[in-house]
Length: 266
Image 1 (cartoon, helix red, strand yellow):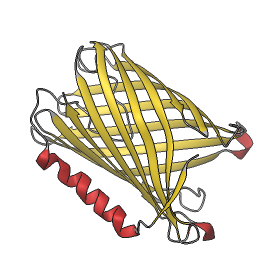
Image 2 (cartoon, helix red, strand yellow; image 1 turned 60 degrees about the horizontal axis):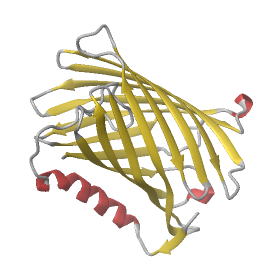
Image 3 (tube, rainbow, N blue to C red; image 1 turned 90 degrees about the vertical axis):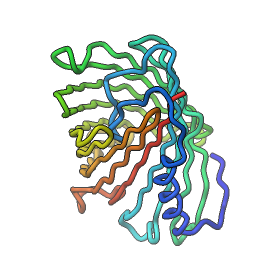
Image 4 (cartoon, one colour; image 1 turned 120 degrees about the vertical axis):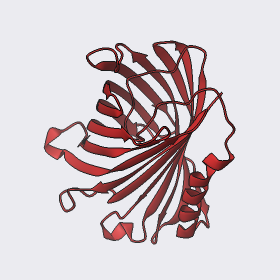
């Protein structure tokens, strides 16, 4: 893993979030924007054939317990390109996943994590069919990280209401020789209401279970809940979610997470 020591301060995290929120005012108008209303969940729908979308992800994590996490904060970044190959199948590529991490003990480090390839199928329509069903496969590749992920995507659109459920099974192998193995099972739920032509508001519930060395006896589960807001312009969108750890005391993960995704159609 490539590690670079930097002089970034916690104020940099606040500045990055402000920049991401200000980006939409500078975006050009285009023909069509994704219907994304959430940042931690995936929809069952795909892009139309021949369409291309660029997404920039920013995730801020902080408030993690433990003496080794004094002064802890982390910024995760992702650049993603999605392409509609048919009206029911899309291909996506994560150009890079990288992060900036800080604790009082270790200072600030910048790390490249991985790149990834994503395949997504839309099987039924969430508006005209009884329920929308999608399938999702993803492979991640990095110097010290390999991961494979599969998702079942369930979606229902009822007038202004969108309901989502994602079931995710994931395997990860990390360390220099990929010897640190773990599995993940995620149950994620979302509900969003269209308030105006452009504004959407709702909530996301995340139930994430980690199985170190694939052992259920060592499993830990984090439960996160928080509001999700999205604004769709003409050919662009921005979505944001603030997640709070519900089961503090029984789970040692990040206490707070805030994610924004900005998307532009081409």
